[in-house]
Length: 462
Image 1 (cartoon, rainbow, N blue to C red):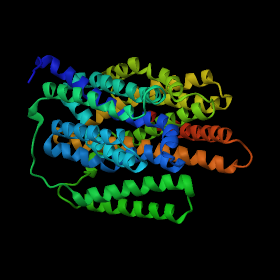
Image 2 (image 1 turned 60 degrees about the vertical axis):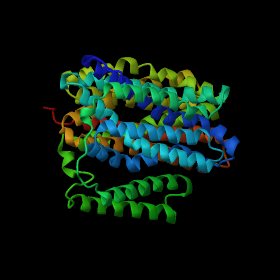
Image 3 (image 1 turned 90 degrees about the vertical axis):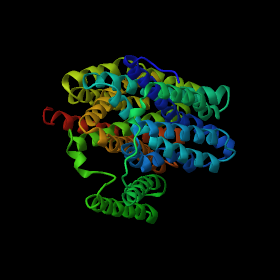
Image 4 (image 1 turned 135 degrees about the vertical axis):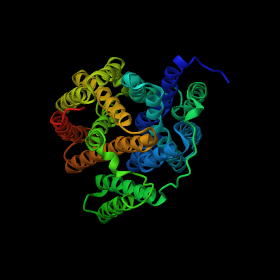
């Protein structure tokens, strides 16, 4: 097996992990561009179109803590390889699917293996670098990953318009194989381990029920009404499972979630800020649909139109890491939330103009803010816990990210659906969609502003 110089090993780790994020993030955002095409190919309804996106996000959120906990038991290197091999296999299933059922099964499997992959990417980078270099390293890897997150719509649009939508999934195979090879030569086997420790299966089951019930309740409420029996029933089951989960986790010997972990470095605040950040970020999914439905552009053009929002990552992600190393996470995260708020509110005011250039400033501001928030907060959290607890901590924070993504899609869809229902006989669907999207962006701006105030009022970090 090829070896690398020890001093270079840590940076090859960053490259390998960045490629992992590339395929996972591309399949998170590129699929939004595929939805009109999938509607034509498979004849699926709007509800099923939402599930093509949400089944992936929901399965990640449901299994993410189990993926993080597995890292503490068998090591992050093994988890990365298991997650990546499984993700590639699921991608093949999506790429060769001949119907919506096969595609949804593949998307769910992508989410399950992504749940093993995601929490271990940050652990690998943080573990590979000494404390004084972690901010820059995580900033670099998060910045590269965010670029691919934003490139997803462009890649999806290009494949859909000029080649085939199936390549959105099949392109994962060569990228994944390159990442696996780099992992073998860069991530030391000394991080492989087997700890004789029982997995908290009851806690895992309760968490899965909690996440699926609450998020499905939000999705169902967006389509069928918040007062429907199914919606109310899902919320009741979700909150009962959450209560049972909290009781169980306080009593078992090796809990899936150690509730004491929330005492580290304002853990609760950081997780809630992450939820809000991800919800705002997922507005891009609906912005892409806006470009196609309201402005009438092609899938490839829609992907190209969001590309400028990726450019700030090249500067802001490393800058966020350096600010973290020097001042702690509060400074970059506060600036990030400020940029995010200004970007969301700018889009909210500009969307009714139906002019792309009026929306451009908001997209760029969002692109400036995102890398200043996620990377510094994640690094701060993982640096503040022991190595043996990093899997759990990473799982919790990544769960916040995925829950925020799914919640963002569900809530924005709920606002848009409510507005479209109100104007169903009065306005064209494209106009009512625009009004609904604008209302959702104003709501997101309020949430982001509250998070900014909370971050600024926090105690000074030690």
